[in-house]
Length: 109
Image 1: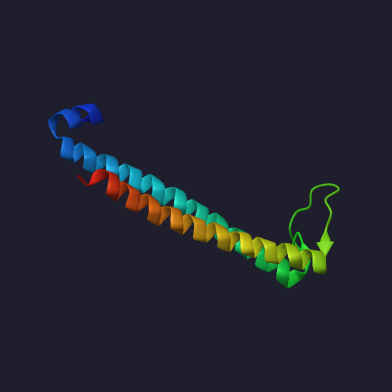
Image 2: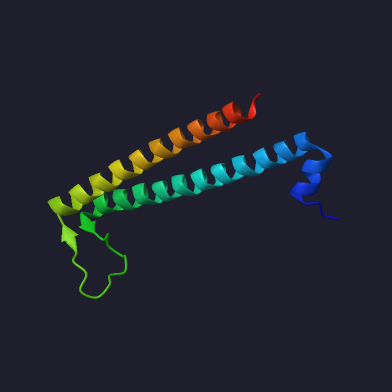
């Protein structure tokens, strides 16, 4: 037996509010988790670029006519990718904290 949000809101507004908040929190956390995982992958890729000195790293597929950077250019790309992943992680964590605080502020009477 399923019940819609409208039926739940008519019967018990507090339960509907709690279920809605749970869904919103779950979606925010899932999006943040995916973004942090993506940031981790970018950092791992950057570490491979820095250790091998090639971009793309050795063993990766290369699309036809793709330029392979080595040396200083590859290291700069690796450092830029690490900076990007750190920035992305900080922004996501900050957005997560602000989002949860905003939800609590808007919901509390």
